[in-house]
Structures are given as C-alpha cells and as structure tokens.
Length: 411
Image (cartoon, rainbow, N blue to C red; front, side, top):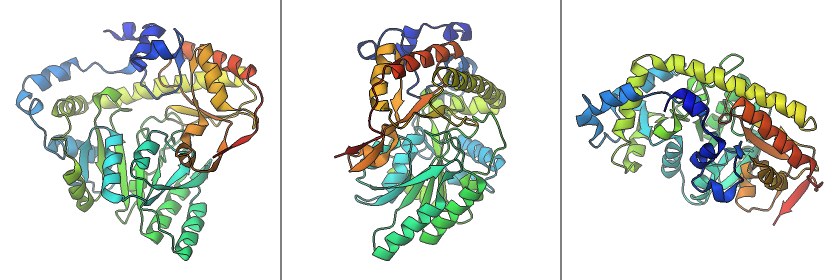
C-alpha cells in the first residue's frame, strides 16, 4: 500500500488495525489516544530489504538465529550506542530480544525472586506493571517532578528501609527520556544523583529508552548508561519507535557477565532472523537517519496539534509540553474523575486512558490513595485533523462530567 493510501485510510480501518474487536468495543469512527501506535504514514517501505533478506540471505533468515542475536546486528547496535555516548560498548554487551518488553521480562527473570522489592516512579509505564506483578514484587513508588525521579526522596526511603532491616530493592526502573506517561525528561543532575543512590545501596538501574531519538526540542542529555561507571545500568532499547513496532525487535545492553546469564534464560531459539536482517539492511543502507528526521518532524506536528487543541478546548486542564516522545500527561482540576471521563469519552468516540492505570500500587489493588484527575494522551497515531476532532470529543465528555471527590480510597 502506498504512503498516500495509508495516510488516507478510514477511521474504521484504523480502529480495526488497533483492536481486532474494536467494532464491538467502541463506536464507529472512534479516534484513539490510548496507545502509542506508530503513525501509518511514516512506516518505512522495506520491500528492497525484504527481497535481499529472502534472497541472498535466505540460509540465514529462514534458519534458527543465534540466541544472542545476529552478530552483525549486535555490532551495529553497539556502534549506535557508542555514537550516543556509551563508551566502549561492544557486541558482547548487546542481546537482541523480541522487543523491549521481552528484554524487561528477561531482566526480571534474572534479578527477581518472589517478594523482592523494586523502585518505580509514580506514575510509571503501565504495561510494565503486569510484568512486574507476575514476579510478585513489592512496589516502592517514588514521586517525580519536572526534573524526573526525585533522587533525594528515593535515598531517604532506602535509608529508612535499611535502618528498619527491610529488604532493599533489586533495581530501579525508569524511563528517563520523555517518560511514559508524563513526557518528562530527567535532568542531568537527577541522572547523576540517581546513579549515586544506586551505587550507595548496591542496586541495579533498568533504563527503559524507547523514545530517546524521538526528540523535537532541546539538547540531548547523556543516557544513564552513558553516565554509568560501575556497570549497574541495564538499558532496554527497541526498533519499535525508530522503525516500526510490528518488527518486534529490541535489545538489552549491559555488562557481559549479566548478559551471559540472561542468554541462558532466552529459550526462544533466537529472535526472528528475518526481521533482524531487514532492520540491519535498512540501517546499513544509511536510511535510518533520514527516517528519524521524518519521525521527529511528524510527531512534532502531532504534539503541537494536540497541545493547541487542549489549550483551546479544555483550558481548565494543564500540561507540560514534552520535548519529545509520544504522550501528553494531562492534569484536570482535582474534582475530576478521569476513570469516569474515559467512559464518557468513549461514548463520544474518543478512546483515552485514565491516569489511575499508571500507578503501580493502585494497579495491584494495594490500599492507596488513587489520584483521580490525570490522563495520558498519545498523539502518535492520529492525524492532526483527527487530533483536533478527538480533543473536541474529549472536551464534550468533560463538560458533561459530574464532579467527583479529588481522591478515592482503594480498598
């Protein structure tokens, strides 16, 4: 299908693509702001790479892959990370996975036992929560502000736990660049402070970094792994945001002794060699840089469209305009109930996620005060025109929303 045809696909076609059962769940013509799907118009044409992968590379691509990943792709990723400031990264420090969430699950299998504690931000990436829950973890939620995770609060919390003899966390999980869901980028001072805390208590840091190259404004900051001098940082990367989510290829970057242990847990016969080769040929051709430029231009326009629509349609709600990534974190007046609002918005044909889904202890059913007035909106998939219409629908739902208490106690 040509790019123009993809861009003009009907809303109903897009709904079906996003959810096989969409017709039964949402009204026809619904506009989706709930998930970080790629914009169809920027998905690259991989025809040339496919021909090569299934032609001259057929003995490689239709066979089992090496469990750590294709050596040439691992070397390319290592060079990509070296260019991004991770000094001396080698292919031995790269493990190819079936997407970043697969890498996260492998890290959990490596480091966690039932009942172990981990640190997450409040809020945090909601799709990671059920992965962590499957290991029966104790969540330690640490607040964040415009500079990212509050390292001083974390340090104080861990010192108190140590003084009580409580179990220290196995790792700190964070998305430092264009945080999901808040869009916040962690300052350099906070990055350094976070690493200092990790070193003080001898714990790992899991850096989830899917959006790092989806930057629109400002200067790039060193990654946590780029600042790491003790080998404590394990970084999750992915081609989902760089190229296409359907390829399902990501990577784990870390110290060789850790990766050697992780490889033994990767019982999949090796991630798909066909998609690895497609990606490798695309990157080797030099097309990635220009493709990232298109991604940045496209999503900058989408972000600006959503920011303008929100300011116009729901001026009562506040947000910080992210410098990159896929999401805007919306704060409604305290009396708003975004769980109820999400249901009303659905009847108007706008699919959104309430903020309560992004708080780990709330999602696990622990007794906790649940913030009721937050919402994450994804601007990646919809066109600017759809964004305008979708925010208008959300505004209509908000106008019909009955006031609620500012917080709810979850039993």
